[in-house]
Every structure is written in C-alpha cells, then in structure tokens.
Length: 233
Image 1 (spheres, helix red, strand yellow):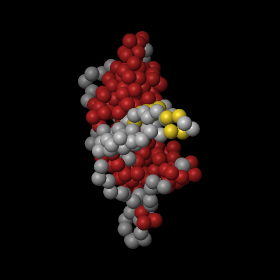
Image 2: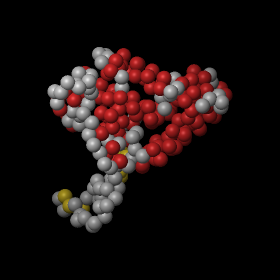
Image 3: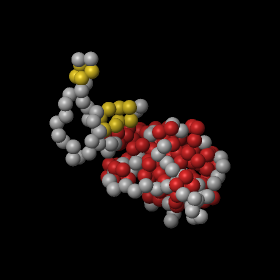
Image 4: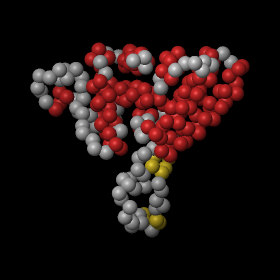
C-alpha cells in the first residue's frame, strides 16, 4: 500500500522482494481495522455499518420478548463494541462517512427504549449512552489523561505526538500549570482530524477540575457524566 493524497497519480515502479512482485492494494485489514491508502477510513466505516444494521435487525425482532434493561444490555453487547473498537483512530473521519453509523445507533436505542417521541439528545440521556461523536471524544480524553498521569502504558510513538505547555515555554500563563497541551496548526482536513491535532484542542477545553482528577476511573465517570449533561446545552 502506498499512502498518498488525491494529487499523487503518477505511475510508480513495482516493488520486488526476492524476485516476487509485491501486490499493491488500496486497503488492508490490520488488527480488525480496514486501513485505506488515503486514510479516509471509508472502507472500515462501511463494514461497521453492516454490522450495526445486522445487530439492529436482531434487536428489533426480539424486542417484544425482552425488557428494556435486557434490550440495553444487548445494545452494549451487539452494537457498542463495533462503534467503540479503535474509534480513537477512525471515529474522527469525515462526518458524511459516519452519518449512517449515527443513524443506526439512534435507531437501535429507539428500539431499546420504545419511545418515538424523544428528541435525539433526549434519547441518549434517557438511555445513559454516549452518541458516536462523544464516544470518540471520550476515548481521546482517556488517551491524553494517560499521557499526563500514566504514560508508561502508552507506546513511545503516541507520547511523541503531544507536548505539554510547560515544555514549550515558562511564561506565566493560565495554561502553564493546568495540564494543558500545546496545539498545532493544520491546513488539511485529514491532518486536522488526526490525534496529534484534535486531541490537544479537545483536552484543553475540558474543565480544570476534570483535568486534575488523579484516578482514571474517577475521571472516566466524571467526564462521561459531563458529556451526557452537555447534550442538554
């Protein structure tokens, strides 16, 4: 696979190893995620859509036999894992690609709650489940939290993505001692959506009280509640 942008269309020589020509592909599955040569994640999103559609169909067919609690448990078992798996990598792709995932997620939750009168935000609040976008934000926030408090669990290549404000300068600014990250400029959308660019922006918007929580489980609980409450705003 050759990673490229839309402007690179010139012919390239074959890659030969031990006399065998290596077949070039446009996408490949790596650890359960379909990676494409332009890093759009469109192929992976399509696979997730199919899995969610099948799971939603099963849920609708058996809903009349089960309670709401059991239905939500099945949602957590059949649907949520596909939405969450490696979401930190592909979840911030073009919104037009993931719009169908958002629709399928809402359809499944409406099936669980059996209430067609709920607004979109009211639906997620009633179910106490995060929307697709907030699931991505939730995973990004956990990654940065580990960077500040428990970086030994992160690969060095992930640690190298971020810079603390305190490592950039020592000027007496409000962000110096508030566990803020240095933000980087990006011109292309594909770069703006990368972890290196979007994670510092997201993290710096989190309240100081949340950023200073010392334990990861407490942080996850409080930040998840914050994301749910923000749906009402």
